[in-house]
Image (cartoon, rainbow, N blue to C red):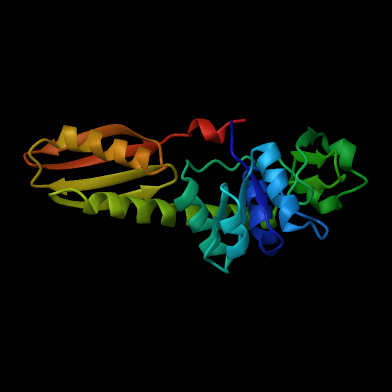
Length: 232
């Protein structure tokens, strides 16, 4: 089952980004007490993400975010929870309700005429009635998320590579794909499978796609696959 979260009052922007990625995120709209957040997390099986150290120490499923900016928070999220880069955009970023596809005709009296002319896919929230389409705001959020995911993957992979006893470095990084070069390797194939396992253990489920070997040197490509936690 995909992870579900409770986000505290200080992380409203992070809540919107996680909902944009399709996560079920409870964000308190009123003055919901810490005790109420803890009770909800325990009752509904949610992880609490908080900027409050006191709250993070009171609940066994709470984690503290050490960053103030959204970029740092997103990198932290991927470093903490791992996963492939999957932007689902199927949940309302404001009220957390699921979105459903609607035809342009159904929203013609709601969205601007120019938006109707430029877009053919629309989604509506049955919870609050908001209408969504893929515009500049969504594109900006997508870029922020992709940049954070790549940075988190690169930092994690760099740590994994340091633990091997030969010359290794990252030679390519794309969405859900990374490449590693190595030298002075006695058994490149065994090393690549070991790297994939270590990345999987670190939260980035990796599968070896290809290996090109030239003597004791190699170039390998890995794909980051969705984990079971990324599905409903």
